[in-house]
Length: 193
Image (cartoon, rainbow, N blue to C red; front, side):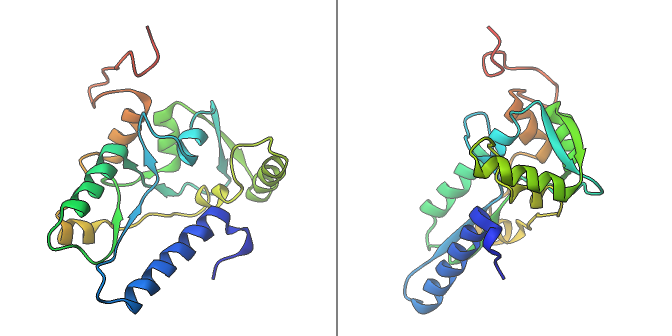
């Protein structure tokens, strides 16, 4: 089920399965799992924020997968809702921003230059760069750039009353330091003095 090369993603799947087993074996304990889409925001450091810092981004030939993120404030709202909830929630919940966007649209909003590459070449280059610590992008990320990976946040909305405030476009604009749909820029966040 989980390949040896899955790395971080494989670790997440194994942890998710382990929590599920724990919950099944200990029904007297309230266990809640929040499965977050990649978190983006002006104060977030992580795989996708670092990946999107480069001026260009690889695009796998023949692929334009749908992407889904959650804004940092929405992620914190979801966590607070779970902590404050009485009675405690049980089960797994996907925490996602509203909607989805094609990868090339995400790149266009970010102002990134798309660099079309065959998957095998891109993954091979990434593997070589990653293993020699010359690259910042783990090879497994290229699977996300090839295949759609989106989830349904409907259960969180139905059972927890959680609905993200940010759409995917708003998440990207906020990540860039643009404060709203009107295009006004927060100059301090955008690094302009």
